[in-house]
Image 1 (spheres, rainbow, N blue to C red):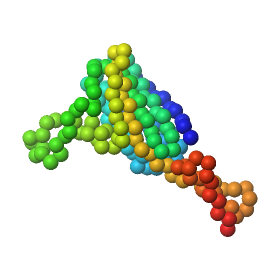
Image 2: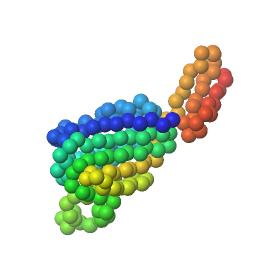
Image 3: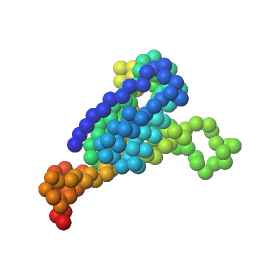
Image 4: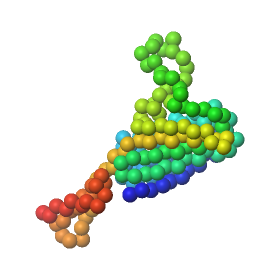
Length: 165
């Protein structure tokens, strides 16, 4: 199963007004497990927050998701200042808080939860692509034939395991 979804955040949106419920609901409807939903929403929220706070983006920010059974590919595009998060140095989490530089924890979380990140600057806009490994919840299907329950295994595309009781 491959599904694509697109979302837009208006250029004048306040960080406190960003609502990712539609993304969360789409992922849950498509039976992704809670860990996958959490990581995906957190990654998108951190990137969108940085764009709204720092990029001086004169246009809307576009986010697209390419969803398959075992991965989620997130593409986030904006026309703000050039910024490559893949070049941000690793945050020293063991350093005393009073000595640690402010910032960078959001990007740190994005890198921790992502399986692959790439950045490109094309035609005056930033394109950030983030890939996450995904897991789905097996969906139980009730058969119209009495006493047969079927479970679909989303990892194997055309396999259905039926239990006859």
